[in-house]
Length: 255
Ligand SMILES: Nc1nc2c(ncn2[C@@H]2O[C@H](COP(=O)(O)OP(=O)(O)OP(=O)(O)O)[C@@H](O)[C@H]2O)c(=O)[nH]1
Ligand SMILES: [Mg+2]
Image (cartoon, rainbow, N blue to C red; front, top):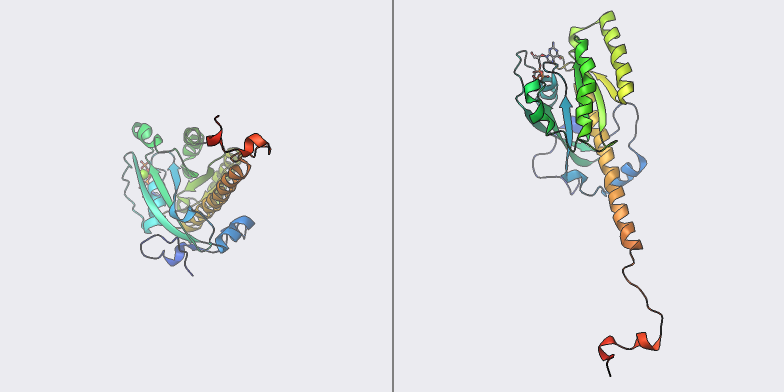
């Protein structure tokens, strides 16, 4: 049965339906599964969760997003001017869910435009080119800039090595060792992908969506719990001791 929160529009495509937690663990958090089963996920199904993709120019940010959202790959380079975004709809544990994926420009001259869009990100994807290790080094700065605009600890961080199709053997292994090392430092999850062949692209974004969804549901439950608590403990109605004074209606208190 579809959720009553399903937004207007056509149903999500079959490959955007996530029933079990992708990669690393099999199940959603117990509270999240229970909330989904009871359709008690508040406004999660109606909100857009923001994902921001950052990294040097030419590393393949736009290509990665286009491969996932449109299933296309363009060999020609067209620099992103400022920012762009795509909205991708999912159905996760039976609940509709949407990601707003922001594609930012890597060119220095657009940095101030792009950084205005970092705020409110639930996930930050820092991308680098596996064939150009300088771009890996620069991910530290990209991440620092993006985190500065967000509450500490509020974002999932991913380090993504792109253009996997261009590397193989020892060179690939060497690049990945360095990347995993940096990912640990950043407390990021590391993925390597190819927008050209599509390798790992869908699995990666499904993982991003599942993590963001789980966090959204938990935050929503917490928010509703705490507002209920505030109502419960609020000193809204005070009882007066039963004296003759207090029994008398105040309007009759004169004379
Ligand atoms: N072989 C290969 N080429 C890729 C891959 N991803 C991107 N490219 C190429 O790399 C170039 C740059 O890709 P973009 O996606 O435009 O790079 P970008 O990071 O968005 O660049 P800016 O918008 O300037 O920040 C293009 O010519 C792409 O075709 C990949 O997985 N494999
Ligand atoms: Mg781009």
